[in-house]
Length: 133
Image 1 (cartoon, rainbow, N blue to C red):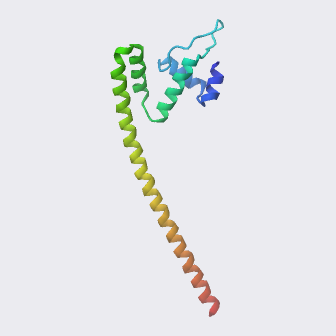
Image 2 (image 1 turned 45 degrees about the horizontal axis):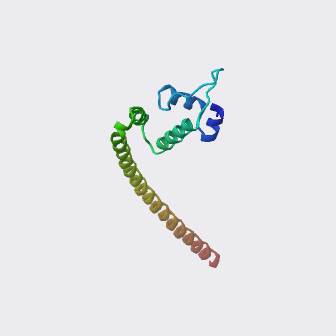
Image 3 (image 1 turned 30 degrees about the horizontal axis):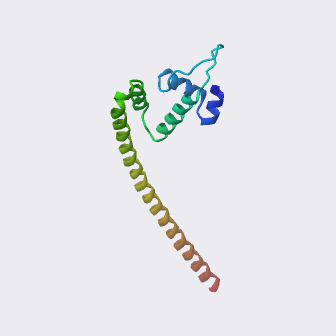
């Protein structure tokens, strides 16, 4: 699959894909004789993984460390798992903070709804008083 197709499929710019490859976040993508990148299924798996992890807020440095450990083989499985568990814990904290923020925002919005409804009733009552007078 060519870079334009990968870019479209994963909604990642070609520049970002090139950058990920340059900083070794994605293993070197095989190239055709004319120099055009030709992404394999394994390359696409890395793109999906990186996109997912970036969406979850993992820093590029952590992902580079993870990839470096992967390249070192099975002796690093425990270190990789620990790295991912640490990032998972950070994500859980972030999710909980976001839930708290959402609850507070919802409460604030509900308050505005009640205030607006009360003001509407007051305006209607005031208008009816003027009509009766």
